[in-house]
Image (cartoon, rainbow, N blue to C red; front, side, top):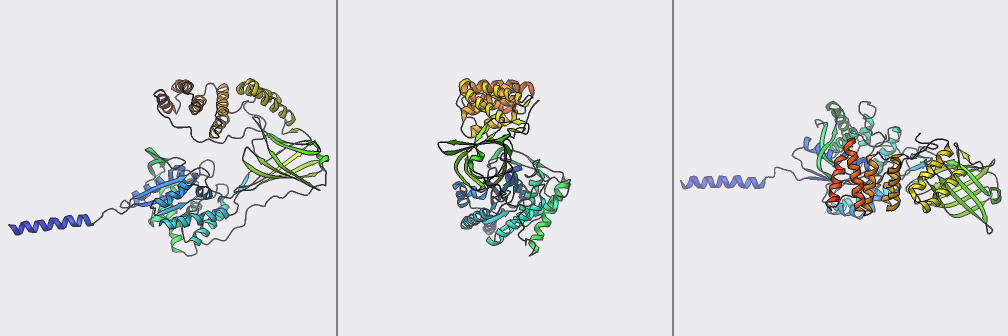
Length: 554
């Protein structure tokens, strides 16, 4: 009997020992994403987690996203918190996704082209050094070209593979997989802007990354994936939502395309060999003109150009004051007059060069001007991470695109002076009435424009200006729930709680009648204010759309 007990004891001990010595779950693979809207659209890191769960259920995975709209690697490098996350995160992979134009685009008359890769490569090398120190592997996420510029994929493919080879890093060929699928009309990879990924595009991104990092076919993953929705900064929502819902046959097409590209990359030494493509643009140069003196061009010149498509036109004034030539350059829109700060004036023979600063865009620029056949031709150049080139044309005539720019200047003078005397809303209403008479038809600023401008001013911490713009929106759109909601948010920021409660109450009552989609959020915010609870600050601003060049609502 004792022998039997001893045998059972030893057997139990062996079982327990084996149980403790065997780990049935592998250690989690940890992936850090550093990118921008191309990655946070449709919460791509969450899609990657779903691919791992379905295809490799024994493999745990954790992801984190550091992002914001338009972020370049150069800007990410300036954030100390990003570097701390790399150093302290115990990551297996750090995925680097550069801005869509490789961080240094060239913009010529509003058309954006790829610039050079200097900043991209410089900061890729810096990040790679930090990533290797942390013990992780560097991964480059090859992005895709825009819908209407398929040939530019060659630029992206060369850039990403070149730096990945130099640093002996991993490249995820999303752009190459994208190229094999983009010709299928039933698989729309793009969001309406033709650049960002649709849910289908993000699904392809996730499938290709999964196949690359885990060396496993993505075939068989469901076309419907739920997860935590990620904000633009990568913060996950508390609740889970459906992130993508793709028919299973289309999901399988994407999975197969991704796997085919990854397999080809892994089995062919020459698959990622790309020759450096020629740039698709020519840097503009101002044509030579006639020799002239500053006296020849004294006075006012009016014209149009490509510096900001929301402008009606621009005015260039030359005046003699105390023996010196004083120059003023201003751009006019229906809403405002943006005046450039002229820092230096150089004139030699047939060329006038103005060194200036744009306080609206916080941008330095150089404007070269020549004279030919009684007209001034200008080329404005703004260097930096983005290189801007804009042509400006001037004549002595004040009429351009059906608008009298001289009369528009007078309207802006009157608007600016009356704002101080009579208040913003009253002066703005009078200004738009006068502008309507100048156009010969009714003009009212768009609701979306006013709303976006108000949030931009909040972002710039110009609280009173933002409140004025939101109040003007209510004046023009008194039946819109959105304008009351926005005004209430601004009042919260301004610390005017009682008035904010009144505006939220108004918005709530209107929302109940109209079935407004954000009724629940408005009600929740109102109750939190009444209960003296903290509420979230307004979200990031959206740039106002350009108003119509010579009209608007009729």
